[in-house]
Image (cartoon, rainbow, N blue to C red; front, side, top):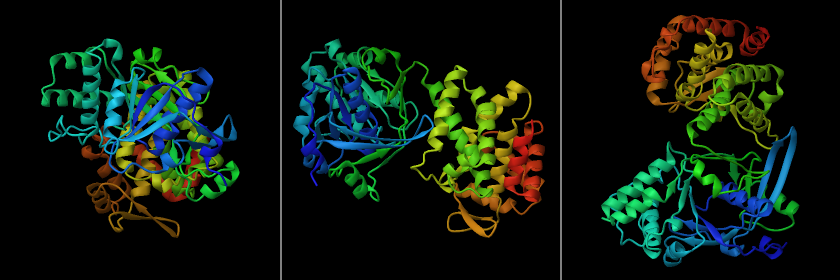
Length: 486
Protein backbone atom coordinates (compact mmCIF):
# COMPACT_ATOMS: atom_id res chain seq x y z
CA UNK A 1 0.00 0.00 0.00
CA UNK A 2 1.33 3.46 -0.89
CA UNK A 3 2.08 6.20 1.62
CA UNK A 4 -0.25 9.23 1.76
CA UNK A 5 2.56 11.48 0.49
CA UNK A 6 2.79 9.45 -2.70
CA UNK A 7 -0.81 10.27 -3.54
CA UNK A 8 -1.14 13.86 -2.25
CA UNK A 9 1.18 16.87 -2.51
CA UNK A 10 1.48 20.13 -0.63
CA UNK A 11 0.38 23.30 -2.41
CA UNK A 12 2.97 26.11 -2.23
CA UNK A 13 1.56 29.03 -0.24
CA UNK A 14 2.97 31.84 1.92
CA UNK A 15 3.47 30.98 5.58
CA UNK A 16 1.13 33.20 7.58
CA UNK A 17 0.88 30.96 10.64
CA UNK A 18 3.58 29.64 12.93
CA UNK A 19 2.45 27.01 15.40
CA UNK A 20 4.13 25.98 18.64
CA UNK A 21 3.10 22.38 19.17
CA UNK A 22 2.75 19.43 16.82
CA UNK A 23 0.21 17.44 18.83
CA UNK A 24 -3.03 15.82 17.79
CA UNK A 25 -5.26 18.66 18.90
CA UNK A 26 -3.69 21.44 16.85
CA UNK A 27 -3.36 19.20 13.79
CA UNK A 28 -7.06 18.21 13.90
CA UNK A 29 -8.25 21.69 14.85
CA UNK A 30 -6.16 24.65 13.65
CA UNK A 31 -4.33 22.98 10.76
CA UNK A 32 -7.51 21.24 9.62
CA UNK A 33 -9.37 24.56 9.78
CA UNK A 34 -6.72 26.44 7.82
CA UNK A 35 -6.71 23.70 5.20
CA UNK A 36 -10.48 24.09 4.79
CA UNK A 37 -10.17 27.90 4.69
CA UNK A 38 -7.56 27.63 1.93
CA UNK A 39 -9.97 25.57 -0.13
CA UNK A 40 -13.26 27.32 0.62
CA UNK A 41 -12.22 30.90 1.31
CA UNK A 42 -8.91 31.39 -0.48
CA UNK A 43 -7.13 32.10 2.81
CA UNK A 44 -3.89 31.17 1.05
CA UNK A 45 -1.73 30.22 4.00
CA UNK A 46 0.55 27.40 4.96
CA UNK A 47 1.74 26.61 8.47
CA UNK A 48 5.19 26.26 9.99
CA UNK A 49 5.07 23.95 13.01
CA UNK A 50 7.65 24.35 15.77
CA UNK A 51 8.21 21.37 18.06
CA UNK A 52 8.94 23.17 21.35
CA UNK A 53 10.73 20.30 23.12
CA UNK A 54 13.75 18.17 22.09
CA UNK A 55 13.42 15.08 19.87
CA UNK A 56 11.35 16.18 16.91
CA UNK A 57 9.07 13.32 15.74
CA UNK A 58 10.29 11.59 12.57
CA UNK A 59 6.84 10.87 11.15
CA UNK A 60 6.41 14.30 9.53
CA UNK A 61 9.49 14.01 7.33
CA UNK A 62 8.49 10.50 6.26
CA UNK A 63 5.16 11.85 4.97
CA UNK A 64 6.27 15.27 3.73
CA UNK A 65 4.14 16.78 6.53
CA UNK A 66 0.94 15.41 4.95
CA UNK A 67 -1.61 13.57 7.07
CA UNK A 68 -5.32 12.72 7.33
CA UNK A 69 -7.90 14.01 9.78
CA UNK A 70 -10.77 11.53 10.19
CA UNK A 71 -13.93 13.14 11.57
CA UNK A 72 -16.52 10.77 13.00
CA UNK A 73 -19.72 11.79 14.71
CA UNK A 74 -23.25 13.10 14.40
CA UNK A 75 -24.26 16.04 12.20
CA UNK A 76 -27.74 17.28 11.32
CA UNK A 77 -29.20 14.20 12.98
CA UNK A 78 -27.22 11.71 10.92
CA UNK A 79 -23.92 9.83 11.37
CA UNK A 80 -21.12 11.87 9.79
CA UNK A 81 -17.79 10.79 8.32
CA UNK A 82 -15.12 12.93 6.75
CA UNK A 83 -11.56 12.08 5.75
CA UNK A 84 -9.54 15.20 4.98
CA UNK A 85 -5.94 15.08 3.79
CA UNK A 86 -4.28 18.14 5.28
CA UNK A 87 -1.67 19.64 2.96
CA UNK A 88 -1.08 23.08 4.50
CA UNK A 89 1.84 22.19 6.81
CA UNK A 90 4.82 23.65 4.98
CA UNK A 91 7.54 22.66 7.44
CA UNK A 92 8.02 21.07 10.84
CA UNK A 93 11.04 22.39 12.75
CA UNK A 94 12.49 21.42 16.10
CA UNK A 95 13.15 24.43 18.33
CA UNK A 96 16.30 22.60 19.44
CA UNK A 97 17.31 20.57 16.37
CA UNK A 98 16.53 23.33 13.84
CA UNK A 99 17.10 26.39 16.01
CA UNK A 100 18.56 28.69 13.35
CA UNK A 101 15.87 27.85 10.79
CA UNK A 102 13.22 28.37 13.47
CA UNK A 103 14.57 31.82 14.36
CA UNK A 104 14.87 32.71 10.68
CA UNK A 105 11.07 32.57 10.48
CA UNK A 106 11.12 35.84 12.45
CA UNK A 107 12.34 37.49 9.23
CA UNK A 108 9.46 36.11 7.18
CA UNK A 109 7.52 38.98 5.66
CA UNK A 110 4.26 37.00 5.34
CA UNK A 111 4.09 35.80 8.94
CA UNK A 112 1.06 37.16 10.83
CA UNK A 113 -0.06 34.70 13.51
CA UNK A 114 1.47 32.52 16.21
CA UNK A 115 -0.71 29.72 17.56
CA UNK A 116 0.36 27.64 20.56
CA UNK A 117 -0.70 24.62 22.54
CA UNK A 118 2.14 23.85 24.93
CA UNK A 119 -0.08 22.20 27.61
CA UNK A 120 -1.58 23.88 30.64
CA UNK A 121 1.90 24.11 32.21
CA UNK A 122 3.42 25.71 29.11
CA UNK A 123 2.62 29.36 29.82
CA UNK A 124 4.99 30.00 32.72
CA UNK A 125 7.80 32.37 33.63
CA UNK A 126 11.10 30.93 34.84
CA UNK A 127 13.80 33.40 35.82
CA UNK A 128 16.53 30.94 34.80
CA UNK A 129 15.78 31.43 31.09
CA UNK A 130 18.39 33.60 29.38
CA UNK A 131 18.31 35.60 26.17
CA UNK A 132 21.49 33.88 25.00
CA UNK A 133 19.97 30.40 25.36
CA UNK A 134 19.45 28.74 21.98
CA UNK A 135 16.62 28.23 22.63
CA UNK A 136 15.40 29.24 26.10
CA UNK A 137 13.49 26.53 27.96
CA UNK A 138 9.93 27.83 28.37
CA UNK A 139 7.54 28.64 25.56
CA UNK A 140 7.05 32.30 26.63
CA UNK A 141 10.84 32.76 26.69
CA UNK A 142 11.19 31.23 23.21
CA UNK A 143 8.40 33.50 22.01
CA UNK A 144 9.95 36.59 23.58
CA UNK A 145 13.29 35.92 21.88
CA UNK A 146 11.53 35.26 18.57
CA UNK A 147 9.50 38.47 18.81
CA UNK A 148 12.61 40.46 19.73
CA UNK A 149 14.40 39.05 16.69
CA UNK A 150 11.48 40.17 14.49
CA UNK A 151 11.32 43.59 16.15
CA UNK A 152 15.03 44.10 15.59
CA UNK A 153 15.03 42.82 11.99
CA UNK A 154 12.12 45.07 10.96
CA UNK A 155 13.25 47.97 13.17
CA UNK A 156 10.00 48.02 15.12
CA UNK A 157 7.70 48.35 12.09
CA UNK A 158 4.09 48.31 13.26
CA UNK A 159 2.90 46.33 10.23
CA UNK A 160 5.28 43.50 11.11
CA UNK A 161 3.81 42.98 14.57
CA UNK A 162 2.26 39.54 15.18
CA UNK A 163 -0.97 38.22 16.64
CA UNK A 164 -0.60 35.55 19.32
CA UNK A 165 -3.42 32.99 19.58
CA UNK A 166 -2.73 30.62 22.51
CA UNK A 167 -5.16 27.72 22.93
CA UNK A 168 -3.73 26.38 26.19
CA UNK A 169 -6.55 25.48 28.59
CA UNK A 170 -5.84 28.05 31.27
CA UNK A 171 -7.77 31.08 32.45
CA UNK A 172 -7.01 34.21 30.41
CA UNK A 173 -4.45 32.40 28.24
CA UNK A 174 -3.70 35.45 26.09
CA UNK A 175 -3.36 37.79 29.04
CA UNK A 176 -1.09 35.37 30.90
CA UNK A 177 1.11 34.78 27.85
CA UNK A 178 1.52 38.54 27.38
CA UNK A 179 2.40 38.92 31.06
CA UNK A 180 5.15 36.26 30.77
CA UNK A 181 6.59 37.88 27.63
CA UNK A 182 6.67 41.26 29.41
CA UNK A 183 8.45 39.65 32.37
CA UNK A 184 11.14 38.25 30.07
CA UNK A 185 11.53 41.62 28.36
CA UNK A 186 12.18 43.14 31.79
CA UNK A 187 14.42 40.28 32.96
CA UNK A 188 16.58 40.56 29.85
CA UNK A 189 16.62 44.38 29.96
CA UNK A 190 15.31 44.64 26.41
CA UNK A 191 14.92 48.16 25.07
CA UNK A 192 11.87 50.24 25.78
CA UNK A 193 10.94 50.42 22.11
CA UNK A 194 10.43 46.65 22.04
CA UNK A 195 8.08 46.79 25.00
CA UNK A 196 6.16 49.61 23.35
CA UNK A 197 5.91 47.53 20.14
CA UNK A 198 4.57 44.58 22.13
CA UNK A 199 1.98 46.73 23.87
CA UNK A 200 0.92 48.93 20.97
CA UNK A 201 1.22 46.74 17.89
CA UNK A 202 1.18 43.06 18.87
CA UNK A 203 -2.03 41.30 19.90
CA UNK A 204 -2.22 38.60 22.58
CA UNK A 205 -5.77 37.30 22.16
CA UNK A 206 -7.43 35.04 24.68
CA UNK A 207 -9.11 32.07 23.02
CA UNK A 208 -11.54 29.26 23.80
CA UNK A 209 -11.44 26.00 21.84
CA UNK A 210 -14.01 23.23 21.62
CA UNK A 211 -13.47 19.98 19.76
CA UNK A 212 -12.94 16.45 21.03
CA UNK A 213 -9.79 15.06 19.42
CA UNK A 214 -9.01 11.43 20.22
CA UNK A 215 -5.80 11.40 18.17
CA UNK A 216 -4.16 8.43 16.52
CA UNK A 217 -6.74 5.61 16.40
CA UNK A 218 -4.46 2.69 17.28
CA UNK A 219 -7.14 0.02 17.35
CA UNK A 220 -8.72 1.19 14.09
CA UNK A 221 -5.64 2.38 12.21
CA UNK A 222 -5.27 -0.67 9.98
CA UNK A 223 -8.95 -0.65 9.01
CA UNK A 224 -8.93 3.10 8.41
CA UNK A 225 -5.87 2.87 6.16
CA UNK A 226 -7.57 0.08 4.25
CA UNK A 227 -10.62 2.32 3.82
CA UNK A 228 -8.48 5.28 2.77
CA UNK A 229 -6.32 3.26 0.40
CA UNK A 230 -2.98 4.44 1.76
CA UNK A 231 -0.69 4.25 4.79
CA UNK A 232 -0.69 7.21 7.18
CA UNK A 233 1.27 7.08 10.43
CA UNK A 234 -0.06 10.51 11.41
CA UNK A 235 -3.78 9.71 11.27
CA UNK A 236 -5.70 12.04 13.57
CA UNK A 237 -9.29 11.34 14.67
CA UNK A 238 -11.78 13.91 15.98
CA UNK A 239 -15.46 14.80 16.20
CA UNK A 240 -17.07 17.00 13.51
CA UNK A 241 -17.94 19.84 15.89
CA UNK A 242 -15.30 22.53 16.02
CA UNK A 243 -15.52 26.01 17.59
CA UNK A 244 -12.75 28.55 18.10
CA UNK A 245 -13.71 31.69 19.98
CA UNK A 246 -11.10 34.45 19.74
CA UNK A 247 -11.43 37.12 22.38
CA UNK A 248 -10.32 40.14 20.38
CA UNK A 249 -12.61 41.51 17.69
CA UNK A 250 -9.63 43.21 15.97
CA UNK A 251 -8.43 39.82 14.77
CA UNK A 252 -11.56 39.24 12.67
CA UNK A 253 -10.30 41.35 9.76
CA UNK A 254 -6.98 39.53 9.67
CA UNK A 255 -8.01 35.92 10.22
CA UNK A 256 -10.84 35.15 7.80
CA UNK A 257 -11.02 31.40 8.27
CA UNK A 258 -14.53 30.64 9.60
CA UNK A 259 -15.94 28.11 7.16
CA UNK A 260 -18.75 25.61 6.68
CA UNK A 261 -16.71 23.05 8.62
CA UNK A 262 -14.91 25.20 11.19
CA UNK A 263 -16.72 27.82 13.25
CA UNK A 264 -14.49 30.71 14.32
CA UNK A 265 -16.09 33.53 16.31
CA UNK A 266 -14.54 36.85 17.32
CA UNK A 267 -15.69 38.68 20.40
CA UNK A 268 -14.63 41.16 23.07
CA UNK A 269 -16.66 39.15 25.60
CA UNK A 270 -14.88 35.81 25.68
CA UNK A 271 -16.14 35.10 29.18
CA UNK A 272 -19.73 34.80 27.88
CA UNK A 273 -18.73 32.08 25.43
CA UNK A 274 -16.85 30.31 28.19
CA UNK A 275 -19.94 30.56 30.38
CA UNK A 276 -22.04 29.05 27.59
CA UNK A 277 -19.68 26.08 27.21
CA UNK A 278 -19.28 25.47 30.94
CA UNK A 279 -22.97 25.78 31.77
CA UNK A 280 -24.46 23.95 28.78
CA UNK A 281 -21.94 21.31 27.70
CA UNK A 282 -20.12 20.66 30.98
CA UNK A 283 -23.17 21.42 33.10
CA UNK A 284 -25.32 18.98 31.16
CA UNK A 285 -22.74 16.25 31.73
CA UNK A 286 -22.28 16.96 35.44
CA UNK A 287 -25.97 17.32 36.24
CA UNK A 288 -26.92 14.15 34.36
CA UNK A 289 -24.25 11.48 34.70
CA UNK A 290 -24.35 10.54 38.40
CA UNK A 291 -28.07 9.91 38.54
CA UNK A 292 -28.00 8.26 35.12
CA UNK A 293 -25.29 5.88 36.29
CA UNK A 294 -27.34 4.94 39.36
CA UNK A 295 -30.28 4.42 36.99
CA UNK A 296 -28.31 1.75 35.10
CA UNK A 297 -26.68 3.73 32.30
CA UNK A 298 -22.96 3.36 31.53
CA UNK A 299 -22.32 5.63 28.52
CA UNK A 300 -23.48 9.04 27.34
CA UNK A 301 -24.87 7.55 24.12
CA UNK A 302 -27.11 5.25 26.15
CA UNK A 303 -28.45 8.23 28.06
CA UNK A 304 -29.33 10.05 24.85
CA UNK A 305 -31.21 6.99 23.56
CA UNK A 306 -33.08 6.36 26.82
CA UNK A 307 -36.40 8.28 26.88
CA UNK A 308 -36.30 8.81 30.65
CA UNK A 309 -32.80 10.24 30.82
CA UNK A 310 -33.32 12.15 27.57
CA UNK A 311 -36.36 13.85 29.10
CA UNK A 312 -34.21 14.96 32.02
CA UNK A 313 -31.63 16.41 29.65
CA UNK A 314 -34.19 18.17 27.47
CA UNK A 315 -35.99 19.73 30.41
CA UNK A 316 -32.90 20.66 32.41
CA UNK A 317 -30.78 22.07 29.59
CA UNK A 318 -33.47 23.98 27.68
CA UNK A 319 -35.66 24.80 30.67
CA UNK A 320 -33.16 25.56 33.44
CA UNK A 321 -29.65 26.09 32.03
CA UNK A 322 -30.04 27.84 28.65
CA UNK A 323 -32.17 30.67 30.13
CA UNK A 324 -29.32 31.55 32.52
CA UNK A 325 -26.67 32.03 29.81
CA UNK A 326 -25.90 35.70 29.28
CA UNK A 327 -26.18 35.83 25.50
CA UNK A 328 -29.02 35.88 22.95
CA UNK A 329 -31.15 32.82 23.66
CA UNK A 330 -31.13 31.64 20.06
CA UNK A 331 -27.33 31.35 20.18
CA UNK A 332 -27.44 29.48 23.47
CA UNK A 333 -30.14 27.14 22.17
CA UNK A 334 -28.26 26.47 18.93
CA UNK A 335 -25.17 25.56 20.96
CA UNK A 336 -27.25 23.26 23.18
CA UNK A 337 -28.63 21.46 20.13
CA UNK A 338 -25.09 20.98 18.80
CA UNK A 339 -24.04 19.64 22.21
CA UNK A 340 -26.82 17.05 22.10
CA UNK A 341 -25.62 15.88 18.67
CA UNK A 342 -22.14 15.49 20.14
CA UNK A 343 -23.55 13.45 23.03
CA UNK A 344 -25.26 11.21 20.44
CA UNK A 345 -21.98 10.54 18.58
CA UNK A 346 -22.27 6.85 17.56
CA UNK A 347 -18.49 6.56 17.14
CA UNK A 348 -17.61 7.50 20.73
CA UNK A 349 -18.35 5.52 23.91
CA UNK A 350 -18.01 8.16 26.63
CA UNK A 351 -18.16 6.39 29.99
CA UNK A 352 -20.22 8.03 32.72
CA UNK A 353 -17.71 6.96 35.36
CA UNK A 354 -14.93 8.84 33.56
CA UNK A 355 -17.07 12.00 33.66
CA UNK A 356 -17.84 11.40 37.35
CA UNK A 357 -14.28 12.19 38.49
CA UNK A 358 -14.05 15.14 40.92
CA UNK A 359 -17.78 15.78 40.74
CA UNK A 360 -17.85 18.02 43.82
CA UNK A 361 -15.70 20.75 42.25
CA UNK A 362 -17.39 20.17 38.89
CA UNK A 363 -20.88 20.68 40.36
CA UNK A 364 -19.70 23.87 42.06
CA UNK A 365 -18.18 25.31 38.84
CA UNK A 366 -20.57 23.95 36.22
CA UNK A 367 -24.00 23.66 37.86
CA UNK A 368 -24.20 25.91 40.92
CA UNK A 369 -24.04 29.20 38.92
CA UNK A 370 -26.95 28.07 36.71
CA UNK A 371 -28.84 26.86 39.79
CA UNK A 372 -28.48 30.23 41.53
CA UNK A 373 -29.29 32.29 38.44
CA UNK A 374 -32.37 30.17 37.73
CA UNK A 375 -33.53 30.54 41.34
CA UNK A 376 -33.01 34.31 41.20
CA UNK A 377 -34.83 34.60 37.87
CA UNK A 378 -37.84 32.39 38.64
CA UNK A 379 -38.08 32.61 42.40
CA UNK A 380 -38.19 28.82 42.76
CA UNK A 381 -35.72 25.97 43.01
CA UNK A 382 -34.95 24.55 39.54
CA UNK A 383 -36.35 21.01 39.61
CA UNK A 384 -33.58 19.18 37.74
CA UNK A 385 -30.57 21.09 39.04
CA UNK A 386 -31.86 20.54 42.58
CA UNK A 387 -32.25 16.84 41.84
CA UNK A 388 -28.72 16.73 40.36
CA UNK A 389 -27.27 17.72 43.73
CA UNK A 390 -29.21 14.92 45.42
CA UNK A 391 -27.92 12.51 42.76
CA UNK A 392 -24.37 13.60 43.61
CA UNK A 393 -24.95 12.85 47.30
CA UNK A 394 -26.50 9.49 46.43
CA UNK A 395 -23.61 8.55 44.12
CA UNK A 396 -21.00 9.57 46.72
CA UNK A 397 -22.86 8.25 49.76
CA UNK A 398 -20.79 5.32 51.03
CA UNK A 399 -18.63 4.51 54.04
CA UNK A 400 -16.53 1.95 52.15
CA UNK A 401 -12.99 3.09 51.30
CA UNK A 402 -10.92 1.76 48.43
CA UNK A 403 -7.41 2.53 47.18
CA UNK A 404 -7.43 6.35 47.06
CA UNK A 405 -11.17 6.28 46.40
CA UNK A 406 -14.51 5.34 47.88
CA UNK A 407 -16.44 2.27 46.75
CA UNK A 408 -20.07 2.77 45.87
CA UNK A 409 -22.70 0.17 45.05
CA UNK A 410 -25.17 -0.04 42.18
CA UNK A 411 -27.23 -3.12 42.79
CA UNK A 412 -24.74 -5.99 42.84
CA UNK A 413 -22.05 -3.92 41.06
CA UNK A 414 -19.47 -1.71 42.73
CA UNK A 415 -17.88 1.44 41.35
CA UNK A 416 -15.02 3.73 42.34
CA UNK A 417 -15.59 7.34 43.45
CA UNK A 418 -12.60 9.60 42.83
CA UNK A 419 -12.22 13.09 44.26
CA UNK A 420 -9.91 15.08 46.53
CA UNK A 421 -8.82 12.96 49.48
CA UNK A 422 -10.15 15.36 52.14
CA UNK A 423 -13.57 15.50 50.47
CA UNK A 424 -13.82 11.74 50.21
CA UNK A 425 -12.85 11.34 53.85
CA UNK A 426 -15.52 13.81 54.94
CA UNK A 427 -18.12 11.95 52.90
CA UNK A 428 -17.01 8.60 54.32
CA UNK A 429 -17.32 9.88 57.89
CA UNK A 430 -20.84 11.24 57.36
CA UNK A 431 -22.44 8.83 54.87
CA UNK A 432 -23.66 6.54 57.67
CA UNK A 433 -25.75 9.26 59.31
CA UNK A 434 -29.43 9.77 58.66
CA UNK A 435 -30.31 11.14 55.25
CA UNK A 436 -30.99 14.61 56.67
CA UNK A 437 -27.81 14.70 58.75
CA UNK A 438 -25.65 13.47 55.85
CA UNK A 439 -27.15 15.93 53.37
CA UNK A 440 -26.89 18.95 55.67
CA UNK A 441 -23.35 18.07 56.73
CA UNK A 442 -22.13 18.00 53.12
CA UNK A 443 -24.19 21.00 52.01
CA UNK A 444 -22.78 23.17 54.82
CA UNK A 445 -19.14 22.60 53.79
CA UNK A 446 -18.15 26.07 52.58
CA UNK A 447 -14.79 24.77 51.33
CA UNK A 448 -16.67 22.36 49.00
CA UNK A 449 -19.14 24.84 47.49
CA UNK A 450 -17.79 28.31 48.26
CA UNK A 451 -20.79 28.92 50.53
CA UNK A 452 -23.12 27.15 52.95
CA UNK A 453 -25.81 25.66 50.70
CA UNK A 454 -28.13 25.02 53.65
CA UNK A 455 -28.79 28.78 53.79
CA UNK A 456 -30.62 28.63 50.42
CA UNK A 457 -34.29 28.53 51.40
CA UNK A 458 -35.84 25.11 50.86
CA UNK A 459 -32.81 23.60 49.14
CA UNK A 460 -31.78 21.17 51.89
CA UNK A 461 -35.35 19.95 52.40
CA UNK A 462 -35.77 19.36 48.65
CA UNK A 463 -32.48 17.46 48.44
CA UNK A 464 -33.43 15.28 51.40
CA UNK A 465 -36.80 14.51 49.81
CA UNK A 466 -35.09 13.50 46.57
CA UNK A 467 -32.67 11.22 48.43
CA UNK A 468 -35.44 9.54 50.39
CA UNK A 469 -37.56 8.91 47.30
CA UNK A 470 -34.59 7.62 45.28
CA UNK A 471 -33.85 5.17 48.07
CA UNK A 472 -37.50 4.08 48.08
CA UNK A 473 -38.24 3.67 44.35
CA UNK A 474 -34.83 3.62 42.69
CA UNK A 475 -33.03 6.26 40.64
CA UNK A 476 -34.63 5.38 37.30
CA UNK A 477 -38.22 5.53 38.58
CA UNK A 478 -37.49 8.74 40.45
CA UNK A 479 -36.14 10.40 37.29
CA UNK A 480 -39.13 9.17 35.29
CA UNK A 481 -41.56 10.60 37.85
CA UNK A 482 -39.75 13.95 37.89
CA UNK A 483 -39.99 14.15 34.12
CA UNK A 484 -43.79 13.97 34.32
CA UNK A 485 -44.05 16.78 36.87
CA UNK A 486 -44.78 20.30 35.67
